[in-house]
Image (cartoon, rainbow, N blue to C red; front, side, top):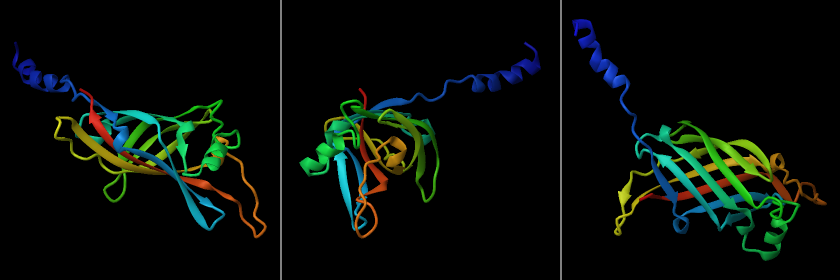
Length: 197
């Protein structure tokens, strides 16, 4: 073996080394929340949540750029603590859950954000319409074991969408001006993860 080839071998070995493998993490539904808020009559804010959803996160436990997130929400589980309003939200005026029972999110990119946050970019699909959404996301907590040996992590994420973009167009005008429901909807996700065994 000549001297040049011998000198190149360590560099070649480094370049061909296998990257760190991402682990699969599952959303712990009992300790997670998928919520939203929207202006009501320009005088208050209505808040709600989706009680049934699941998701997976592929992540090596260290580098946020390895994050890949997929989530599926059962839209009929919408809960604003008012039964008649929830039925209206399930109707064709809003989510039309008979035709579109699920909402999905699939991440496409992770990048550095402001003030210690990261930006999570992904495709949100609702009522058959897919649009890109950017979430401001906290860095995932350092993994730690609970008393039963489960490895845990978690994060929070907040994003804003215009509901009109997804066909949720119902509204009514107020006599004093303005509309019953605002167009801008804030999505707030609190996630606790279990490392898949």
